[in-house]
Length: 308
Image (cartoon, rainbow, N blue to C red; front, side, top):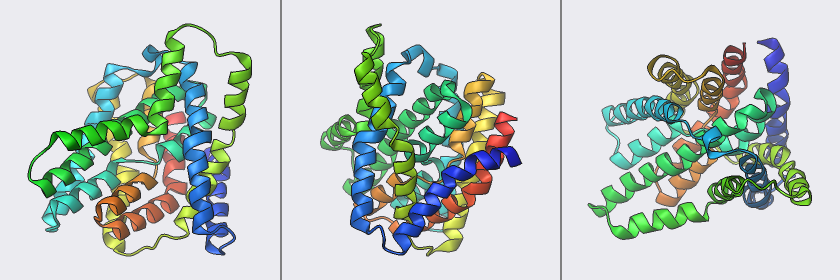
């Protein structure tokens, strides 16, 4: 485990540096927001396009892989929602808590870290996990909350969801990359080098932005946030591992990447959703802070197991 810890520590050290910069106000909330926007719309999108443009759809899509990830995530989603209902919270809060339990920081942390540590062959599985999180689970929580509030599901909600997905730069960059790959034409060298140069800023920029954004988060509702962090860091990778290895017999390489991705801490976009809908943002904030801190050890342990 120690060799893996030495490999993961630089990534978490960048998060820690960002946290320090945000905590001492060297990086203001406005500066963090602009850095996040740069990473989200430019650097990370360039990285995703470059990965996808050098892969075929067959290298990304695998029925057993998708089924295993959905099955494992679905089990934890159901556990988190059942736990929330047992505590007597509303359906909206239960949906947000379930989102915390299964949506990891795949875009900003998983893509840069797992591809570097697990090799370029990890790119396809990581992109598949990211696409499922963005398309399936982000849509699911929106449908649940809007359905509860409106009492029905309207065509307008579905249309807004579709437009939202089409405007998401991560979805667009992956789709454009796969579209280019499907032509069979190699990406011209200047474009490929431009994407490599811009995408190279994604790893340090994303990790620093994660840390800086954590500086403004509080650890209220620690008991619930601790439970949700346990769901995300322990139950989620365990359930995904069970589904991938025993139920759907996913190949060892992609299964390892899927399990490592499932072990990532709660994603920042869950907080954005919670703020947007006005549902338990403090609880989500605490879950992100606790899970990201604890993931220094838990992610390292999971990666040691899947890479060992």
